[in-house]
Image (cartoon, rainbow, N blue to C red; front, side, top):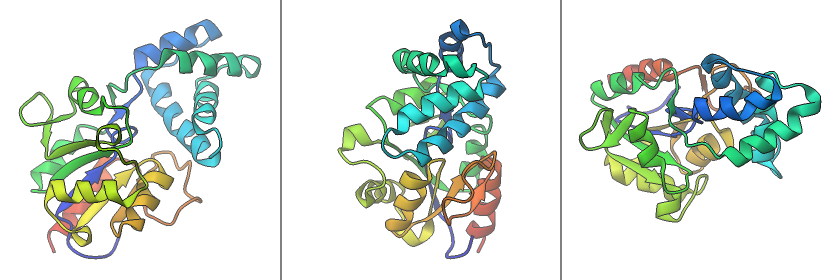
Length: 230
């Protein structure tokens, strides 16, 4: 990653900090003959995100099918299992394995805001997961949690990234966006003039975008450490 000093980081929520509630996803898939571990459920999310990126007409249907397949559901049951995941509508309250590295990022003196395409509940989800919140709480304090439903604009629209920049008090040249959805997070940020990295822990989407790939937040911390020290 090249460019100016990094003083602030904008983070997507889903896939970067939180995942669909593991217990709910596991219970939804149990009738279809699988009992996936938390690790398998985590892996399934990123496989499903790759499928979502490849199907712009029915992205969440593609996500659900790929998620079920990655959890080991037999081919003849995948459609029904995917429907069950839709019905379950889990909250995103299971932290990602690297969510704890958010504290290390903040300790660098970096301003952080979450910028999420959501349904009005992402701030509650992050707080419930114990990951982060605005102000005091069990998680890491961040400057803002920007929920697309509440602000009326969604990624990849540059306007939502502008709200993130306002929240962290910096310019686009000194910010970095981190997300697991290349279309919304990476392309959207770059369209807004903000550098971006794509969180792709298993290498599922490496041929679909130009931005650098990172496997986890620890790698982001190291990138930012190098750029913040300039």
